[in-house]
Image (cartoon, rainbow, N blue to C red):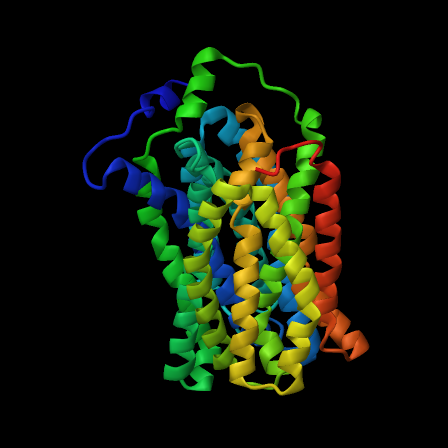
Length: 428
């Protein structure tokens, strides 16, 4: 408590308080997306390095299963770091999270291949994904709550949307980086060591993030709660809010995983286009999402966040099948880019309100824990398992339309769950 109150005001040296707070809030989330998009873009090379004895299709499933392990432990990380943030403060939690996240990236960058150390190699990348999953489990919730609680009244959706902007920046930087590596390195060098470079760069961001987060102030709402010693309600009393949060995130995370981390695999295996085309499409996605998120936040503050969410999810539900059919009818770069453009616009519309809406569902005393639990449960069930599930479905059915079917089913579920659990909450 003493530490929280000591950091209730922000030092003025260096960056101005608002700039420092903003960068400290969004840096970790951007790093998370940089890592997971990089993993997706190089998934086939990672599968080759760590699962060389499996058939190509099964090696890819194994690589995405290791990827999914990070999502499996996210709810645990969300609970642990959420409880810590609700008791020790958002700033302290964010500092610890950044250190763990950077450690996971560094292990992934330096882990020897299966040929070098045998079974220990996949165990190492599994360890890296567990560390990343635990840290990321607390990152989105703690950082979103930190940013929203610093926002002025009437601008919370806009400020929350800046957290989502960091995801777009992560997508943009990762895809542009991958595109540059794919164009500049010979295939054998890319497979041997080139794919590791993004993870090493991600790990190097850690020290800067640690310094920045240690220098920011605690949120006014949390400090106020500490000073008045407010009673903490049991999280079980927040079940409707938890379910509503899961519904809000489910459709967005399904779209995100299949249009971001899985896109490279789909482009190569189903559209039969070069892997660099996927990197180019994801670069476009990053640009579109970064530009769209703030507009979605401003619109949500004006007309109501639930309303914007329902608009976006309903339109995507109707357009998902035609979108994939359009790309498959005549696979080429132009159609891929048009499909990515539409998907990115709708994804940004659906998810741009997530930080502000999720924070608004819970009282201050359990806000980080509630946001973390609802967000990470949805990401695990509907997002983290999506690449492996869709890969298996395509292998089993032979139909390249499986991603569309998966996303349509999740969109229906998501809309129904949110509608059932709003319990009279205002559309605004």
